Image (cartoon, rainbow, N blue to C red; front, top):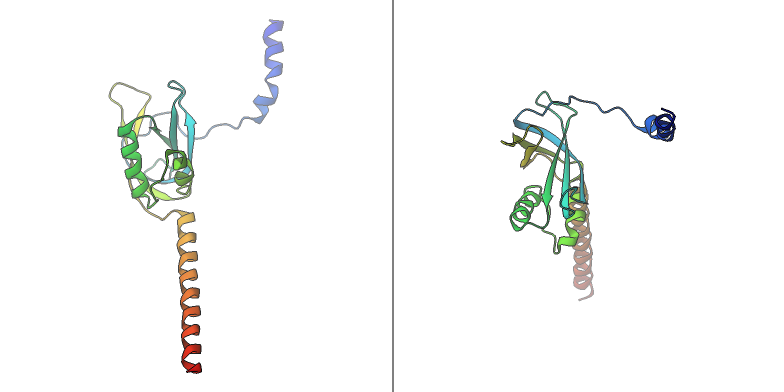
Length: 171
């Protein structure tokens, strides 16, 4: 018994640091849900050890507010990569030029509002399939970049116009 208490004492900091998880432990019902992309990261699969992109969505409606759903995209599968490219385009993000850029491009979607569909896997009480249906808002970083591009274009136009006026005055 003393050995168990010694091991528990070692875990005291972890116990105090760990927040309680909110939400139901039941599976999210099948259906369409509004959600926000809260993270997109490249991780190694627990079972396969191969790289995967992990999308984490926080549901914002449909009676499941605050619950999270994750989508795992195996980057070693040509079929999965095809679906990932479709998802990136649906989000209005550019195609990465290299698979090594996938994580950086996908991170631009963090904070976006989207609509997802959830389907239960037939042979599992635990796993769900998550599908991206559509973007509801633009990627936050992409909006800023587009505004900067427009401002830059306007400044270039103004500079061009000023040069034209000077040429006419000198003639």
